[in-house]
Length: 251
Length: 352
Image 1 (cartoon, rainbow over the protein chains, first blue to last red):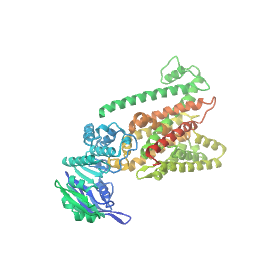
Image 2: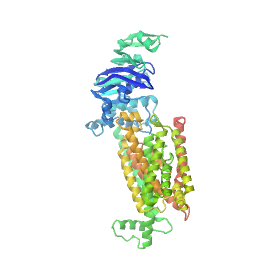
Image 3: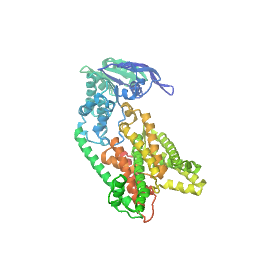
Image 4: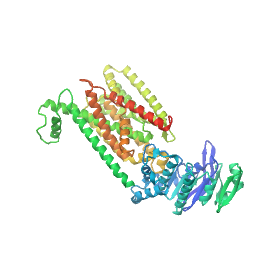
């Protein structure tokens, strides 16, 4: 579905991404993990077509992502960014309905109301739908923004640290939403900091370090004590809980 | 739940429409009635009906009354309406692309840029070529000022209040200096015209001028309404708007041209009338919410109402005198702007 080949991004001659290749398939959750400044967000913006790589190609369904028009791209991929502010006091339901705008004047716009209500319910913000977005707490804003991305209903979904502002329960719920999107046959790429969360909910894990892909594979393949220690510079223990790796720093 | 709200929204919209319509009608009739030559409301109504080809008993028989209405008062009222609409829509569009409710053509210097353009046209003598030449110069001046403010005050897809206001100060200072220089070198006739531009007045509006302003305002209004949905999405920030399929670069450029057109044509014929673009969209947003399609349409009507009423006040507050209307709107708008600034500062906890 999404395919990156030999992608490099440079900023002032410094390589932020160096020769990264990866594929994302429909129906899977791919987690991007790695230390701060490793290049995860840059990789996400290259994959989502926000940023043109200095070399290499990104294709979506075999087509070069840079050659797709804004409006059509918005029906192919949705992006949840870390910046979730709204300039004017729109209501929550209006903000979520904005996710439907790429589908206006298409047959799919018939389902707008149902899709919006469904997105509000799944992200646990239905009770906020009449509130002004500007009056919400950080965690509520993050969930409403996720609802907007969900309402966009695209085959590919990018989530940039969707759990950053959330409490434990809502972290789990957001990742469950990501899983259910994958179960619908969509491709989900999610940037995460919590390795255990990534290990529990992703099909595959891509570990980014110093602008390169250090390892990619199933969580248990990628998350070894030796590798995490080397990449993060921190001694860790790895436990197995219900078949999922759990990373605990050695304290 | 979505359906329940739309009923509420429709109700609010209806209330606002009726209120604005009543205010506008009252303002128009009062403006036509008041003045040195007394005219009765019945005569105003009768004259209007007769112009539509309906003969009636109320229509004024005195030709002086008839010409006072059609040569002096009606064009002035019509000018107030179209200029008010133009400025309010320009304000709403500007706030949408800056993502900031404090953006306004007067505050950030677009109006003074346009006034400088108009003044250059007068001093250089281009004005002799006709009304549209001044309008063209005002448009170019406004366009340059808008572009300057836009590119200087934006960072990471948003505009911070401080940067926006500082840029406005710089642009206003520069345009003010330019105007002062032109005043210095101009002959007395041009000098008088330039002073008129700085203060703003609807006095002496002619139908031919009204027609130009009305035409440009109509174009700008239609363009702004067409772009209403992208403006909504832009409230999510530039990146998110792009993810939802908005061609942000193109939207920006088109919007800047719309703002410059609307402000330029208004300034070219009536001078600087500040704060209309600030007060009106803000009041409408409080009444019907921030969705841009209804907001832009309501702002156009609200702007017309505000200027008709302000002009009425300008004409009647000093007996026999005609206050510059720009003075009056600034008198109301200044404190209002201060209030908005104070509130935004308190909400964001600083000058962010």
